[in-house]
Image (tube, rainbow, N blue to C red; front, side):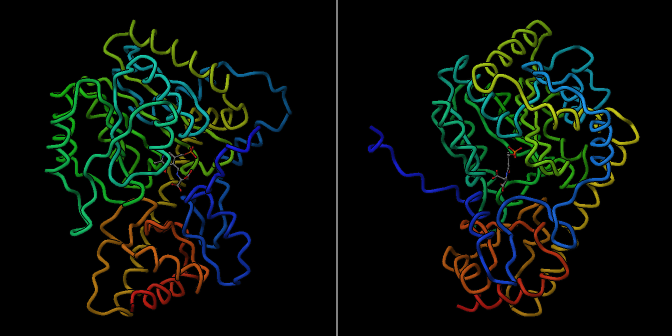
Length: 398
Ligand SMILES: Cc1[nH+]cc(COP(=O)(O)O)c(/C=N/[C@@H](CC(=O)O)C(=O)O)c1O
């Protein structure tokens, strides 16, 4: 009956978690999956989340179905984080926002919606991008192509090629963009480059779909949303998927959001209805526990302020690890530049190690990175950074 079903090879990112857990090397270091670990190598529970959890736990309340769109406070929290508390588009009711099962759920609902209502649209992702972008959009029967992005030769962006490519696309083609903290390269567009990208998107009447999973880990909450807010200022139709997995450290609670910025309130109402219907047909309604944590933290001014401070502390620790790894490597591997470590932004660094060198890092040192050479810098700490630098210096010799 099922003998013709293909075996699943496993996910190049999530598959690393199981291998890491089984690795008996006492010095093993997990630089694979995009998860933030603290100075002691532990996944933190944010103080603001602890407070929210206490409010949810006492008294324990029933767990009814949530609305298909999720809790209003969760949705409001997404909108204010992405667009700004006082954004005119919010006051004018131009944004349809639903709470989703993480950023992944947001991407899936958005892709299904696009396939249904824009069936001719193709989706173009950066080369390279987070692998699941391609899988999710193809899973919604959307043809996926790649636009030029990362320049291996310079460690920068093939900007002119990227713009020239966008100029060949058709109306309503979807461009999947990383507003900050590009995954897997850590190489971000400057604000001037964003202005040019959005200008071409406007001229070609393309649909920007911005996936922001690391807001706050780049520079700050507002700067990291520059591309989103610039598109809004230009009056562009816009899809935004966001994730609270990393910046609330709520990975397993599966909390995120999908927002669609529309030209009129009537269109926003139409879109909102169809987004909820799409949710109903995929997973019916989002999880309540994580949604309540988001609602409490995002809408309590004191907790929100505490949360922003906790995200910036995570951001700053990652930046400190970038500097530390760079300085140790420069001492161990003279004559080779490691400037990319501090030029790149957010949780990831594209190290340029070959697949063979990445394999040696795992096999010989128990250091796990993604095969495309992505390193999750958040897995580094003062106790393992020298060990990782030594291992990199070793594999870089050949
Ligand atoms: C760009 C991006 N978008 C969306 C997600 C999904 O987020 P979530 O809210 O958990 O559904 C992730 C997760 N990325 C990390 C984990 C993973 O691969 O699922 C990663 O790149 O390691 C992203 O890196």
